[in-house]
Amino acid sequence: MMLMEIIQRILGGKTTEGVCFDGLRSFMDPCLKEDYPLPEALCLAVLAKACVEEDPIHRPSLDDILKVLVRMVR
Image (tube, rainbow, N blue to C red; front, side):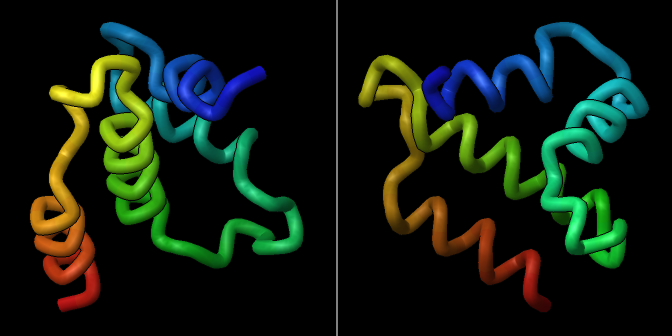
């Protein structure tokens, strides 16, 4: 299964945030033992989904990616 398919399955189409969180928890490395901020993990999953869009024109630029990551670490 390709990364794009996995991320789309986790994030779903029109699902609630709770469903996204549940899907993301099932995907995360169990060694982390839920010792990570779930909203930030979801933000990274959404960013990853954008980065692997089938049509390259819909993918974020490196500048956009860096802006998202900088906001996350502040």
